[in-house]
Length: 333
Image (cartoon, rainbow, N blue to C red; front, side):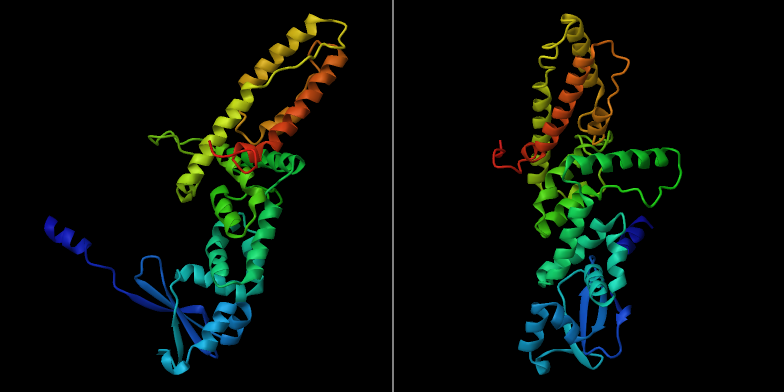
């Protein structure tokens, strides 16, 4: 019986041919076919040559240069077998044929995951407006200034609070897109400005203790290339090296109380360094809102320390490209 069960499990899944329920248009004059990722299902899309040719110079040349008599027919019209994933092709067709679908994807919290496949096809078929649209959305959703980062980090804190209390998250709270698919999209659409921040966001995710090697609990982490892993680990090392250079500076230069304030702030700085996770995206906000009212130091030293914290925040943020090798002075080590 065991041998029979093993034999049954090896029987290949039967091939299934399907007409797409939304994009098999009766008055279409060309059919595109594509297989799914398992190559067991083929989906047929009946579309309009004119629509595809206007959107893509690749399709235009395909229809212009190919002789209809040389093409196989399907349901009375020419058939074009596409070497693309059926799901990705369907998403691309939806963007071309259904304008409201564009906002549905772009406004979703998972837009980077949903748009990655069709964005790759848009580049392949030179549909430039889709690539430009995706690039614009990435720049909009990823903060590239400290002020924007503070705003998103504060909202991420609120989202975490909602999730901990098992309550629904309000739609108006902004959160960062999934970072790995954002990295892949940024490269696909040439939006290199967001890359350092996406890599840093991966480092801010918790580690998976079930893994033999340290792994971040990012949903799409396995999509990263080996070079990206190296970039990320080197970024982590550079952040740690940067932390090793921190010091309180000359806080008592104008102080009337001398060593008393100096000792207070060395102790305070030590507590901050020990208690703050510098790989968390929220530490910048925590440092911004540091409360010094209960510290027994003179007003001048309090202000010096607040100023130094702000300098620290600005310097750390500006070094993101350096940490992850996206600046001219950050060659691979």
